[in-house]
Length: 462
Image 1: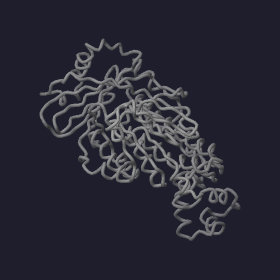
Image 2 (image 1 turned 90 degrees about the vertical axis):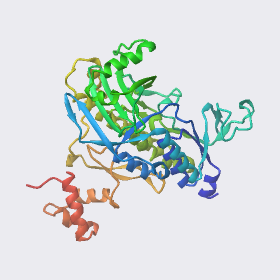
Image 3 (image 1 turned 135 degrees about the vertical axis):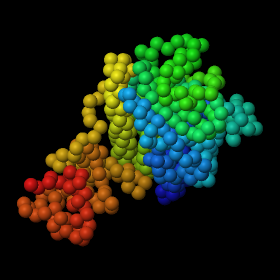
């Protein structure tokens, strides 16, 4: 049986239709798989700020219709450690509109999209059985819930974000954190956003063009001493009235009385992939929202998932390799983003002993975010990489700052380059070595030599 025929018999269900679930589904369709996405509409209005890097990530994932009506960048004010910066911008997006656009992209790609809530998920001898809670979904309009047959899948993708069930999997958790999102309503205005630190946490505020204000305060669960739910809005509003950055957002506006509590605790799933399932996006690793790149972080794992799934289904002899590849990258991404947050928290020095700041400036570890590459650390090792939609083992070059390795640079395999340079005779220049040993043209050898020096893969000879 050919690979194409095998793929046509493999049905994959993706639980969740946000950026991570959508990117995974699009990648699987390109590989020829039959994919169904079950997506529950977002239960409350939410606005998120995204950067140009996030926008580029969405484009690279294959989203088109989801990006058609995005607004232009708007001003962003940041007040941190007593200093205020207004140089940055961010694009404020309506998440419900983005998710609907993702749905249109999925349907255009041939993905079956089912709007509804996931009920019980059961593992069977043949794969998985997925029941739906809502009776008024695309597949269940004419059948009561009790008569609806569960959906069957050979492979399951968990992409329901932070709300995904833990499923008994071991998880690493950071400082327990809660974000309280409140809506205010004012006159229509120009979109803008702001972030400000305060004694017990930090605030993010956004004004939407229709006059809706999104005001979110983030606290430490253990030390915040938050009041009962009935007094929660008044407590948050009292804090907001003390924050200079919040004044433009609450002036001539009134609270609607609606507040949502959301966990924003950093969580890493220690086992993010199995033989017939995988967790992507925030379901695999959810980091602190401080950096404002939640969508980018979710895409970082989702873009790798289709090749991993393809290997698990088509090359079972390489399952261990595929799972190793994926878990290593999820772990690496989580710690990288966690250290970005750690360093940003450490830059706020006014409340050094406050539990909120004290715990976060020391977690997850003391390792530097970036290390200066040590030329003596270069090693040629065999590691799993993505190759033609599959996970394969190839020789890569690792460094103290690139532990996952670099396979190619602009199409040039780097392992032969490092081997040639490390074994060249004394007195032979890197440029000449690349030409004579590897047969590179003078221009390519010169350009690669510059890159090697600039990135400290070669020692500067004195």
